[in-house]
Length: 506
Length: 99
Image (cartoon, rainbow over all chains, first blue to last red; front, side, top):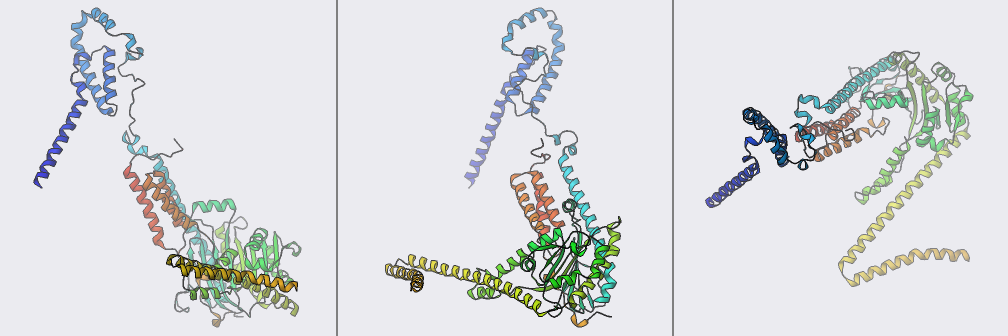
């Protein structure tokens, strides 16, 4: 152990001495330089500095200091030698000419000044942050920080504005809601709905979505008020909203009981929304064949109607109060969607059915349970969406103090009208029932198909597993037996078709 | 006429809220993580700054029901990416295409 330590120490000393030698050798060129050589005769000084800078290309500081030292020594020696060399100036000049040929120096003009740079000289660039005022160099960082701060400030302002809007809308509707609903404001988590503390604001789902749950009214089960605001808290989203002209929306979703509402599907919407709803909503695409213009009804604005049963649609659209409301607020209603077969948008309902029917993990029993849930989640709903836009040149804040009250009053009237409607004749009722049966059958077929596919997949997987087992077992007899089985299965599959053909020909 | 009925009260269920497919917060979180990793491994400064932006945008667009831990971890990762990148190389940032 001690021997090893001694060896290591000796080795380290050797390395240090070798490094020193190398260092000394590096600088050996400058050891023999006499101060006499570095005089006003510029060719020699520049050549000396050239050679020194070439060898020390990576040490600009060292070169600079050496130059400074040389310059200082030049000045000192120059004065001493001036007197001595005055008499021999001419001689020295001649010597100069003979000693130094022009051919040696390519650019003799440039040697006039000792500090002129030659093409080969590489002056290393000092990083900007190490010269002068360091912080001025960080311009990009300053821009980034300013952008971040600006986004943060916009976030705080946008969030506060949205919160103020929500409070205003809530207070505009609070009294009317209290008079119509036994329960106003419920988060679904408190044990007792009858508390002394009154709900003071809408429930905040996110900075751009506020909701309010109301329940306990005649002819409906519940009403959910959703205030979908523009995402003012995100600078990019608010810019996009300005470009796409998206505005704040107030959506009322009313759920009916089975006995409260007749079975029909209807939609009255602005043209841009009608296109989207007809394409995306499952019930509207299944039950309503085409979009018709609502100009005949005399509604201002560009409205379209999607209708399943004509009588139900005319019952809704021939309402005097609807016409008055549309005349008073031409662009307020974005869409009215009434349906007893509501199941959401197409992509979401597809995801639901696929997640129900196609689960590859879990036991066979669990899979079977999942496949058995072939029921669609249907709701009887009335959905009314209003645009919250500044009216009559006033600001949004001021208009949202008065408008929501009118909107709510209209919605309550519409609820009563829908709940009061019943089909005039049995034929219409039968027609509606037939439509629903047809759609139900289509849905069951698709679920059946999926189940079959699942079963087939499972069978193939089993067969593959068997095959692997048999192949790995290295038992020739087993393999032969398995191949025979496969052969029989193939024959069975082919035979029935041939049999059918035989029967037909007879 | 009083339309209120105590017997017809139903409790709120969160599933009844209309589902709007907004994947922006998730994308922003993912972007933040990717850019943070890029900046840490490749020592690129502007990646770290973009990671901070992405974390901030993800936070601004997040829902109240979302887990706050994920947003916070995204923030922490992006800030650590900036700090580590500058510690490795204190020189000012240069944007590649703007020389």
